[in-house]
Image (cartoon, rainbow, N blue to C red):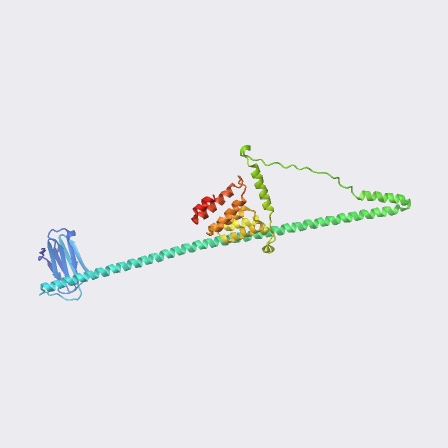
Length: 389
């Protein structure tokens, strides 16, 4: 049973009560203080200080100071008045037990409210932090979108400038051709005038010689005819010898036949043009070139405008469906847009056109296999990917 401390001292003013409790050599960290508006307890085994206060105090503003083996309490009164005694008089055991239980319940309620307030403050802090993070992410996303839009506008402007430059160059060429044709027409007109002048001179000479007789006149005109008509060109044949291509590989490893077949297919692909397309009527001459459309598609792909790049490759393929790079580049666009089945189809079509396999098209075949394999892996079709290797 703990020993009750009775050698304490206390003082008061109208607004506060000061209590000094000796610790009797007990370590400071072993002292347990419990205080409510009507009850004060200090437990420092084996001693116990307990007081049932005369009137309510403000436990929130009250303080306890521990030092020099003494605890000094500064208790602020709720009502300004002088107390007759420190503790309530005439309190029996039941009353003291009720005060203890009531104080414990008040402390528990106060601790619960403090915990709930702390949890609410934590939730508010988390909500505020989440809102700040969402705002930062939204600003970053907007900044990225603005950068993309600026790059797209920049690329569009560069493309328009390039088109304008091409148009001016075409107009300049057309003007030069017109000037050249005008000069040629002028030269032809001058030549025609010279020939006309010569013929008039010869006719006047022939009239002056008409008195020499018809025979001499016939001979003279035959001579003029022979002089004016050139002799027919002699028939012959010209032999042309082309320099053969030199392949750097050894003869036993040579792929001359495959290389020649590949070059022959490429030449046929360049000549296979389909111009019977209604959309071509509004296009310029350079825009009807598959190579120009391929370069345009590559530029749009570099600016991440994949749909426009696919449209450029589509028109180029309609013009010429024998160029494997068009299918290969369109497969890259479909891969970026997650059109995985279309990426597989275009990669397979590119591999069909990249035959026979030679060193010249090795890089393109490697890209086609990589893009088709990537699409199969993203579709989790690993067995089909291995079958098509």
